[in-house]
Length: 376
Ligand code: NCD
Image 1 (tube, rainbow, N blue to C red):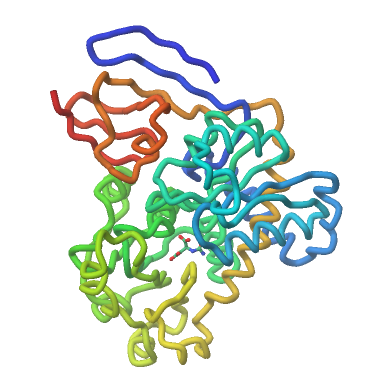
Image 2 (cartoon, rainbow, N blue to C red; image 1 turned 90 degrees about the horizontal axis):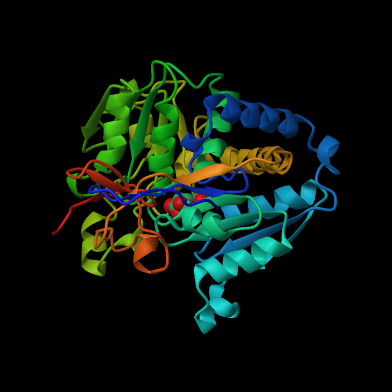
């Protein structure tokens, strides 16, 4: 980690690196790197047994501060299938976190035991915060409402295998687009390929954050925001369903007002093209009727399996990357400015340097990407 900078009217310039190549946000890496991982994932899916010694002697730590079935188990299975071993916790209440240990100390200690560390945490920006003090590469397995890069690698491998391409697609994403980190990472990734257009299906309350639509605009991707599945489904190559994220709402009443609005059923599937595929990061609550599972276009269970293969590819790739570094922070620290997102990691782990990019009028937090209003 390196700090540089000078005191200027606009704030102290900060540069913070980790000593490893981390995976915090897929868009930190070039598309050629994603393609390499996806192609290796496809290759492994065909012959998984050929990789059974690929990570022999290596240890992966999984730190799950939030519930998980697929992400945690697919990472663990991936490492075991590669001949490596695993340590970690999935219930912070049984670790020293329950005694009040901060993220920096837990990360520093566990990353000193392992060769690679996978972390899921309820606060936005937590993976980047962990990478600042980690002593091995970190993989973000979901940081609050923010990002979920390895789900996106799963989604891209599924698209690559099942549609044969990652470009020229009309992509529908439906559900809780405000709180759904899988939707955010997927939009950012698919915006990097030519000819993709987006139909964002949500209630007005659950629209995708402005920083994501800004990225779509900057990449020249056409998008529209609509309220119903019916008005979009006929034009889609892929429909990505997501659940309403109950745990991210301020109150039960707010959740109750949003739940049960979307349900993909056979009647709606009949309005879709023959080649449209349905993906879902899972878990499903009630946004896809069970009888849709029998439809050949419903690929979400297959997608979960691709998740294991792409994570095998990711672990192999990241463990073979040596002597490198990741730029984590390169913004400015403004005295007295704090991130206005209450769930940003900087608001619970107070020792973190609060760093913002952009100009005085439009500052964005470098951990959670939210826009910050300056107060003097
Ligand atoms: C997603 C997650 O945790 O963000 N699940 C997953 O990783 N497969 C989606 C969700 O919880 O709704």
